[in-house]
Image (cartoon, rainbow, N blue to C red):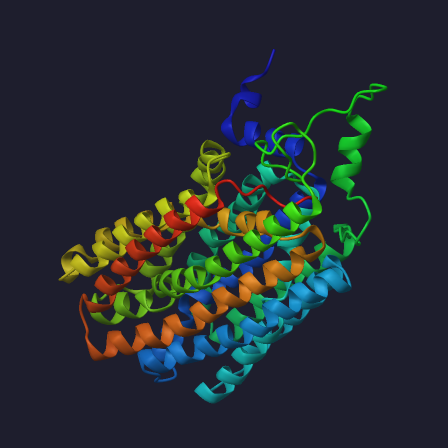
Length: 451
């Protein structure tokens, strides 16, 4: 008979996670929670600091963040390549450790040039761990459960972002040098967690993964009988209608089709992330300068995003589990489009706080649907021995978007204050939704890659 404690949603969710996922997923989630809290102490206030303390324009602040994104294009791809060559664990430990050092040093920068140089170094070392972590999850989690596994990382990140901005606003009163130092020390704890508890999951070509070995050990063996494979399960090798594995030529055709679908997905993802990044980087400037929202109030509004993710992320992902990933992402775009439309309609300071709160709710709805599906969709299209590289290439594509988004958005905000930027952003999301729906129709009948 379950106790009252067992019926509580957090306890139920924890038991489901322990039952359904490898320990590696829990270790990555714990590390993400720690690191996200460290980042959340400083990131929501970085553009405000650049504009109000260092005298940068909105466009210049966007260029500083673009420098990070430009470097992340190469860093993400290199990190994915290294994850397939030397292992997921090594890449993550080194990347996170160096990130912690750079963040701590950023607090010592006293001018725009110095912090730009450090931001470039941050872009070189920080993004490398992301494709390694995503590839590690794909190594051990079956295809149908991957969105929930990536959702768990999103929840862990969100927990850090709930408290981080509010605490960061308080620490900022002690000085940005103290704020960045504390942030670096906290992020460094992730490197320690990975060193102590994170196993290596890299699957060499021709070997059997831990997840596959477990499935083989648990599968019943019947002499003289081979269970038929079907192409409709969405797992493993494509098969013919009678259950016989497809020919080598058919596999090659499917591989080429997956590669074309992945290539089509990359520019769509770049545009999406360029536009998504506006609410994190340019909206704080608009909120502070044009709508009169105080720094402390913005920190609390930013925390709303994390709170909503913690409450709804895993449940929503469970509801959409099994649905075509491209179509789920297409729906996510409509949430972002509605949020940008709300920002465009804010004409005065009287409705600024509730209006931005509503927009953040809509942005979060889009994020809850979008972010777990992207790496899972990429994993479905990638060969088992190239998961790190595919995740790295995807990260590089989104890096192109986040490199372009802040400077272009900052320039438009300076050149045409008011709704112009946000109307364009809303329209961009609507177009992206249509493009993802078309891609979904193309990929609907493609089985995921083997392994």
